[in-house]
Image (tube, rainbow, N blue to C red; front, side):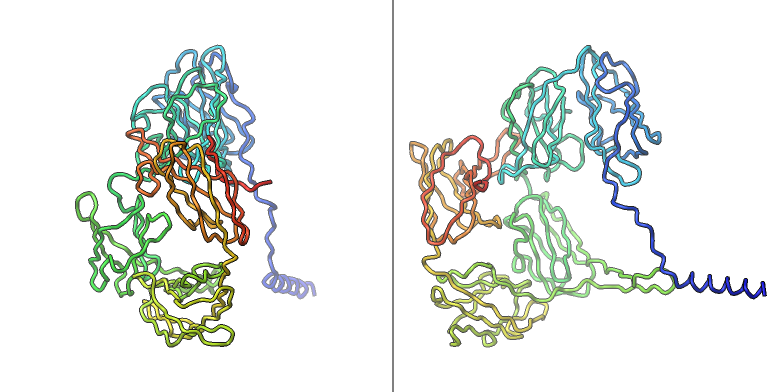
Length: 561
């Protein structure tokens, strides 16, 4: 009996164990707190400092990462400190001779994080003085995109105690800081003095302006430590020299994106693989910034396509490979698991209206196709209003045949139904669409408003460009304004629909009808940009005259409270 009972228990345990649903223990919310410094030896803010090693003790185990690029010392040391990990502590070994009567700031950047979750002690600094006091002056900065006037985060602000036209190219800064999410920064524990200022946004963390895609900004004047001003640094990407290709990537078979360092008007690229179309006949801009080009072609069997591009006064050959197939598992690990391979597919053809707003009754209605259209059969399209057919024409707005225009005499304030039957449009890849129905409502003359801008206090430019911008950051209208002797201009925007808008003013000093960036090497700032100080809310059929006195802040428009 005892033996039988034992077999029963074992059998039951095995069966229940194999059928049991094992639920892992939940560990609660993820720890997002960075390691906390609980003690430093010698203590931070020490005076008459002469130690060769600093011990930082944390409340948990930490790890060190990329210390050679992340740890910065102000004033700079010729030999950088060495970080040695010891469990919950880090030894900072000073290998350079310290200057007398000098306040030092060690910024650890992203070099120290907790061992479990990788939370970075990004604000960790250690301050000491080899003299009898800690320097206590500071300077405040704000880093902004010179064109949009939006804040730039994670920019490195560099102060130099010497003057040169090439500081950011060759010299280590005397002090450094980093901008926050709102673009603000405060460099503290500074000695009394005047400093040249340069800000860069870089990826290699070498405190040098040495890559064409890096951002830079600089002040035309030196800054006195301890002043009460928040200094604005307008940052930009230079657009000079040869515009080089950064990379080329196949988005899917039939579509390749060529990305350049700067905005590009044209590119000298030729396909080397047979059966590919001539480059100039199959391209369009891939972004609003015009720094990328999309190249369309009919897919071929080759996994690698070859092109040649003219740069550096010679032809370079580039290869573009098909995207790798993705392996997708069944979700079960072990013997019974299965893996499927998904080949990169060409997306289905989609047709959308170019705008979600009501259609302007004076203009053709534009539709955007997701791929170039190769065949158009207008007999499979209908336009109706009040259950009656309307005569119309279909045509393409662009040479690539992605923008389809519906042309007819539209009646103001009417509703139309535009229908595309299957095979009306066939794209480059032989794909068509299901039946598509678009409901179109046209505007009325009373929907539009006229906005007159009376602008004063304009200086140092013969002409201005005014850009009327909608909530999607799209330029609705651009106007040129001539400045009179009193620094005034009057510019009228007509046929503006109801909505909220921003107004941007560009000081077009070289009169080339566009905004120009700066040039650090010759000390040239980008063309000045101002924004109307409030969001402009336009109501239906309500004309307005707005006065704008150009001020010193030029901040982006904000909603009125």
